[in-house]
Amino acid sequence: MDCKQALLKLYDYVDRELSDNEYSEVEEHLQQCKHCFGKAEFLRLTKKVVSEKAAKEAVPDYLKDRIVRRIGQLDMGARTGNPGEEDSGFLFFRPWVGILSIAAVTILFVAGIFALFIEGSAGVPGYMVEKYAKMPHPYPNSDVTNQRHLELAFSDPDPSFVPESIRNRAQILSADLENFGPGDMKFVTYEHNGHLLAFYCIDRYLFDPGNQLKKHTFNGQDYYCYASEEGCSFVSWSRNGCVDALVGHMPVTDLITYASQVVGRH
Amino acid sequence: MPEQKTKRKELEFQREALPHTDAVYRMALRMAKNKADAEDLVQETFLKAYRFWDSFEKGSNCKAWLLKILTNLFITSYHKKTKEKQQFTYDDVESHYLYNQLEGGGNRQQLEDPERMLFNQLLDDDVKSAIEELPEDFRVVVVLSFLEGFSYQEIADIVGIQLGTVKSRLHRGRKLLQKNLWQYAVKRGIVKEKQ
Image 1 (cartoon, rainbow over the protein chains, first blue to last red):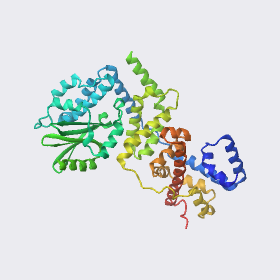
Image 2: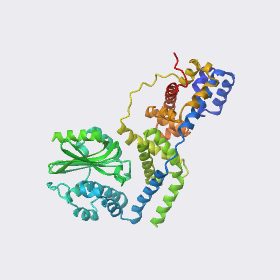
Image 3: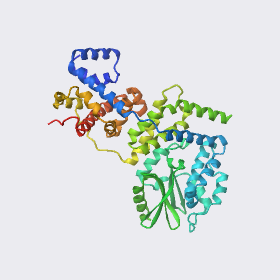
Image 4: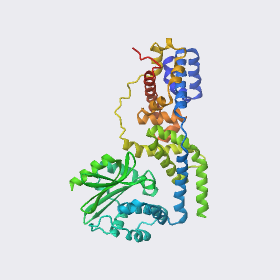
């Protein structure tokens, strides 16, 4: 084996990906060739140093605890056999829910998703109708009733009006409703008299009770969103007393730009 | 009883999957590049893993399975929001870049054992940044190979790419990593830039 052949196999050699035969051939060459030996040693050293210097972090305890706790919460729903009750109760007592019941619609939907894959029922569960009926309407001028909100929330999603860039992203992630979970996205639309009133997205942020709903005002419009530092879980914006849209999972600034474009098109 | 079954699943998951949190966290850090996103990513990975626990083939490589979930989550949701797609010309770095620089830059004369010297003086953060500056496709395979010690075939399975693609990405990733490390060495004044 000459240097050229040896160098070609050097990476595989260092990564121990050669067959025994090839390995001995390279080894033999390295014993005779100081130049190639130096390179091989250097590659080995690089690998060693990189792994030593970049692999020291241990997961923080609070994150470990959080994971264990969240898994317990997932199970709690499964154990009672009535996950919707459990989930919606736990979410409903958060103060922001009362402020904007569209969030509640979404949360109901999330609870519905739980119900869907745990109980296998496709309609609007009775306990949700009951709970939702008691909630104040977020947009008093709207002619869309709470009941209709609910029905629409549970109807088939039709994201056709959503810009393609967002839609593509959503479709990839929502392909498998059965296995919906944190990290996935699901788009829901609803309409009234043939006019689309709302579109929203539920995603992983909704599963985190620590998230707060925040209001942003832009060009006189209010936008509500669950926001993390960089990303936004979903946003609603209202116009003529109706929710116009909710969009998910993009940086807050992009979202507001996008929202203003859509509102401008009306 | 369903309750017992759930409890058993929970315990089993804690025993099999949770010991890998450090590895999952490390990979998440190198991929997401910041602590907050990394923590999110770790949490989602484990919650998703738990949901799919029944489909995990017991006795197979749990760490690889968790990192596969993490890689998928990262690709489908995280890097899209960071708009990371850099424009990059892949073939502008020579092989053995760092080695050649050290050999040819007059540094050999100055230093007793230039390689060791160089690496000892590089900070942990330099090495982490050097990895994080790699384009994503390369970063994934470099992390899996260098930090977690997976074989080419295991990496192919985790990332969902061909074996040949693993090799070529690792090869290019290595070259770029050497270049990045060199730049940190120059920045720290450990070595002199070749004239």
